[in-house]
Amino acid sequence: MSTGVYESILQGLNEAISTEKGHLRAKRCRMTVQPPEEFDAEEIRTIRLSANMTQKVFASFLGVSPKTVESWEAGRYKPDGPARRVMGLLRQDHMLAQKYGLISQ
Image 1 (cartoon, rainbow, N blue to C red):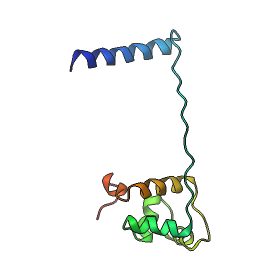
Image 2 (image 1 turned 30 degrees about the vertical axis):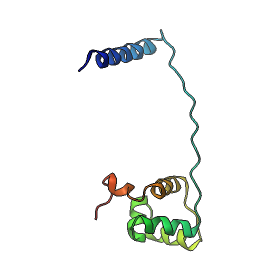
Image 3 (image 1 turned 45 degrees about the vertical axis):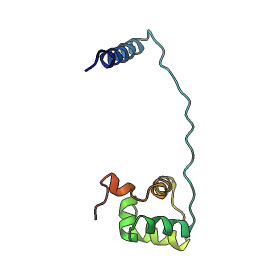
Image 4 (image 1 turned 135 degrees about the vertical axis):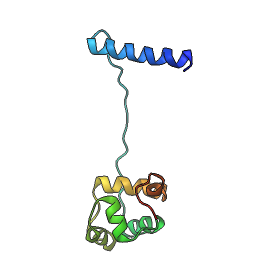
């Protein structure tokens, strides 16, 4: 391990100890989290097909029932936040599930 890396780790540990003891205030940063996108029935179907998933596989991947996916694609119901977040990520990268070993073919 190079000296620079060692010194950086040591500095971080010393800052953590000082913060815990109350000698140093923790640094705060502001983050803005974008709300999950909303998808209509056709967009949901397009995302699923671009990921090369059946309704059953898509449902399992999202942790919902196949009937739920069917109702989304029929426009009877809309997905909630976590499912919308994952669908947004899947729309950006349709190979996401395979890349992370979440499904295999």
